[in-house]
Amino acid sequence: MYIEKELCQKCLDCRPVCPMGAIMLRNKEVVIDYETCVECGVCRRINICPEGAIKQVDPIPYPRIIRAIFSDPTIRHESTGISGRGTEEMKTNDVTNNFVEGKTGFSIELGRPGIGAYLIDLERVVRQLKKMKVEFARDNPVMDLIVNQETGALRPEVLGEKVLSAIAEFIIDENRAIDFITEMKAFLNRELDSVATMSVISRADANGDCRFMERLKAAGHDLYPNGKVNIGLALA
Ligand code: SF4
Ligand code: SF4
Image (cartoon, rainbow, N blue to C red; front, side, top):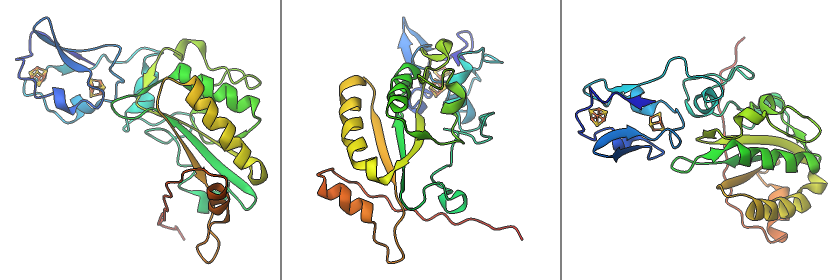
């Protein structure tokens, strides 16, 4: 994204809408900082500029297009057909049944609006997950970036790209899950410069109790439970 200098009236109306703080005054011009911008498209989509000065390079060249694919919710990931972060694995578990009894689902999300994440940090996480022998979720766009399934190396040309957020999803046996969380928490704190959120997906029983949550508490982990009911429409 860029601002066409000749059209811009320097009103700065566009500055607050950018979730990354990429729109700024520089040498008395309003500019979009090329490195900070994740190509989420918000500034252009909401038509905030009365002069039509906010422009998109079209098409966005590869590998920069990866920023838009992960950050612009109007773009669908080719590999999953889903827009935004490109996955609905957890939200549709009652249909897919991926996280069954005895298995624990996990996600590790890197980045947040205002912070973002570089894909080199995502690669660090994926490499570590490969070492820890987790089973990666199938319908996740991160899989499409992996070029070496043994090591977890991502396409080298995308490592310098920054996205609003990216999420790795995987499954491990429940009996390994507590030790995994302890080890992974230490890894994330030690190795990452970015913000990361680790989520655990576990089913409640018929009474609404979640055995795994109790085990986590007993192991001394801080929990922020987030119950979710997704109501879908069935086609006859
Ligand atoms: S809203 Fe348009 S005219 Fe105003 S500062 Fe932004 S780009 Fe320039
Ligand atoms: S595309 Fe998104 S990140 Fe880039 S300047 Fe516009 S709002 Fe900010």
